[in-house]
Length: 550
Image 1 (tube, rainbow, N blue to C red):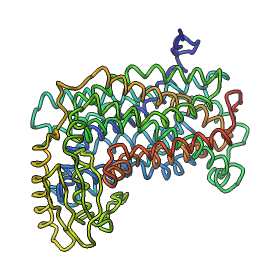
Image 2: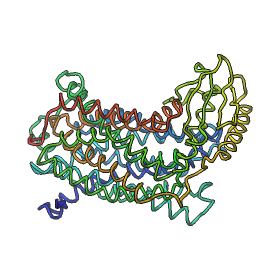
Image 3: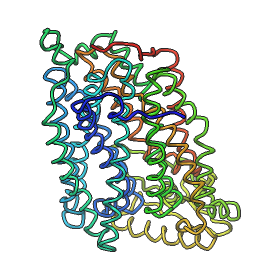
Image 4: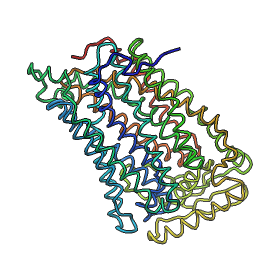
């Protein structure tokens, strides 16, 4: 049996334990905000995007969530450069203040009903600020801890940063559940603000602790010797030798790590709640239980990577995820909402539409309006978690949804005003829902028929993959780059991977499902990216566990 060494059991003195703890607080904030926004996506959609129909509003809510991920690489450039020029400590003290305030201020924003379009604009602006700060947070924490860690234990030390996802999740879940239970229906109207405002307490604790820290010994050595980089961006990205490593790290490490991480955590929650219609509370508790069971494996695989290497563990996690994602998510459907399988077999749903009327409904900037009749029909079915097949119709015809033998014509909104389109698409949604209910499609998963142990088992397997790719990743990234440009060089590929490849997973997967009608079609995206990482990482990236990093 493998024993996981805790910091206090590993000969680490009090000062070094404080280093690990303080560095991890930023990751707590990251995942607190992540799970908070993910768990409250439906509420946020109603509060800030009520000016459009429900399905479009939900897509916009996901895109607002993704906006924070989109700007992470730019934050990596700004704060990575600052970290290499003036120091690790001061830089990630700045980033945690920006992160904390950006999260807390969401709690005081006006709703769309109160302020109109300014409300979603302010929400997106705060998401962008949070994403910018996050771009400098993780690289600073990983670099800081690794530069304090003794040779041969960097995987173990840095893996503690990853475990704080559990703390962030449980903080968000506890605060949401307590607030929701105390306020009842008022939670959806104003109580949702409390979990965001509560983050100010975490911010105060984090700032106080980080102000007590000393600067990284490696940075102090470079400063004393006069070997700091004077142009971190130029040395990192304008010189082919280092830029090549940055590109290979992105494609051969962080892209695959990101889609496995977000697939196993956020997309699994999204799949349970938005596709299978499991109530938010039991779904969140299942994810929390899986994370609680899986969290020690971050340390296990981080420690194991000190002995057998970072590369084989991370690439094995990507490969296992790519091979097993589809059967695992099939299993989640079977055990969480078997009524969908039964209804799809007895009363299959078909969308008959002009193929030229059907779009791929992914718009990362939120400027497109998907008002064609095919798009309206497919978005409504995808939002309801209903699998369907496609059938071509005559050019120019209005799309029709067939549920068993019943037919529901869609809405062609191209020539309608916004108000008329909202009314017409709302009526279509009600008519479609009525026919689906008659055919036996469940509005939500029946809690009495959920096989909780088996769903939990599926989620734990996904979590094990997450720990394999995420536990050793910080040590691998730190060891791949020289000290004087480490903060800058590792931050950019990490945040392009996690911000773009991972952060856009939910809206891309939703768009793929809406386009195809297959509720598992969205999994093709993480599978393809994970396989790409396995091939490129295996062929072109070195093992680094025995490198020195001074």
